[in-house]
Every structure is written in C-alpha cells, then in structure tokens.
Image 1 (tube, rainbow, N blue to C red):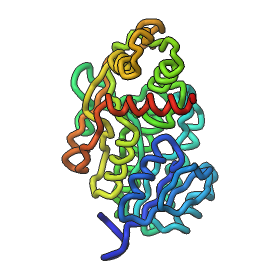
Image 2 (image 1 turned 60 degrees about the horizontal axis):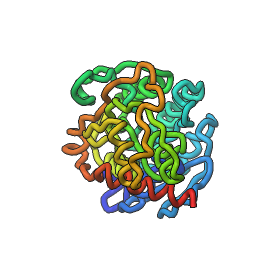
Image 3 (image 1 turned 180 degrees about the vertical axis):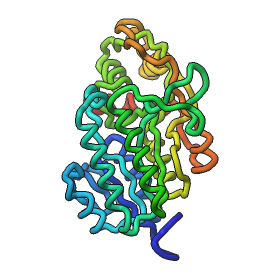
Length: 309
C-alpha cells in the first residue's frame, strides 16, 4: 500500500460516495487501514468510518478547494451522471468529463500519488466470441456516455504520463444489487415477483457479465490500494444470458411461472455478448472474491421484498 510516509495510513479521497457503486467502495475502503475522505453532493445514510465533504464537482472551484483541503495520497473518482434511461445521451456527460479533468489537474502538485478513474465495458468493440481484454480488445465509441468516458481516460492517461502520479482505470461491467435504480433489469424482475405480478422480459438471449455491486466495490477498493496501472476490468469473467438470470430469480422466488420471456421486444442492435477478461483483476490486483450469481440474486429479491413491505 502506498502512503504519505513510513507508518502513515494512506489517505484516500472518494468521489461519488453516495451512489449505487460508491457506497460499496466506501464500505470496503472503510474496512481497510486507510484515512478515508468521502465527497458527494449529499451525505447518504451510510455508516462508515470516514470524513465527509459535501461538494459539487461541477462547480469549477470545487476540485482545487477539495484537493487542497484533503491533501489525499489517492483519489478514487466515481462521480458522473448515471440517471437510468438518460445517461447514455445526457449532455451532462460533457460536464462530467470536464469535472474529471479539473480533478486530475488539481491533483498534480498536491501530493497525490495515485488516481483511479472509472469507465465502462461499453468502451470496448465487443468481440463476437471470447471476453473483453484490457490489453488486446479494440475500443469503439457507441454512445455519448462511453465516448465521454473513454475520451476522459485518454486525456488522463496522457496527462498523468507527464507526472509521477500512478493512473488506473476501472472498467465496470454489469453491476446489480441493493439500491439499484428500480427500472433496471434485476430490480424490475424482483419487484414484479415480490408483488406476485408477471415479470415481463425480452427473449433474453444476450449474454452479460453480472457482478454484485458489493463485490465491485471491494474490487475497486483493492485496485485503489494497489500499484496496478492502466485499465482493469471489474467483472466476474462469467457470462450468463439475461434469460437465465431472470429465470433464476423466478425459481428463487418460487414463482418461475411469472417470468415471461419474450413478452417485451429485444433492444435493436443489442450486442450478443459482453463478458470481462479478469486476469488483471485476479492476478495483478489480487481480487477474486465474487459471490455466485444465485447468492447475489437471492439478496436482490430480499431487498426489494423488504422495500415493498
């Protein structure tokens, strides 16, 4: 673990700490021997051993002030626009790309030694077979969201190469779990099953790498305290079809009859397979603790059942 001086705890600044992913990165980092500082526009009801900072990183003055005040060793940057159904084409992607670059610029000369940004598996030009590999799979823009993410990564990589700051880029695959937006796949199925209503799905032929967000949080935390540089996939390395995942939830809920595959149209242009290669995550970062999909989905059902009670 890198740190300020021999015997000192590593000071980490985490942005987006109140979000779907951020709260689990926060929990994992809080369990480590680090001096943790969390920033968000509002403080969430999350119990964690950290110092909270309320700031709006879209304010051009926020990043320099925050970094100057905290003086972190490492910045883990998750904050971005992620509103379900909107973020793919949201013009705010441009604002967040700018905010990310301002945060990077503020980190130079402020004692920061490591910067971890977060990207998306949609940056890849997905192979027809095989997994998305950080070192060999080509990249391709598909939407404003992933284009802005990859553009930010390229500029950060070029900028940090001129400094002594280590730079890593966590590419997130298909995360699910507690507090996920209700309209997304897993919550929509779980909510219908909990209410005893039909869970309407597409044919579900697409194969995806589904990772419990709690495991993703632990993986990002492990990456943060490592010295690994460059892009690292945050996924399980296992491909499961949407149909199989939905059917598994139906069986776990004891109502497989309510899962209606093919009731909704398939998305136009849906890529058939998006699965992570996880060699870097497992062998370089040293993280390999992802829970089985069945276990994670059982917890999703429990979460939404309690939410509906």
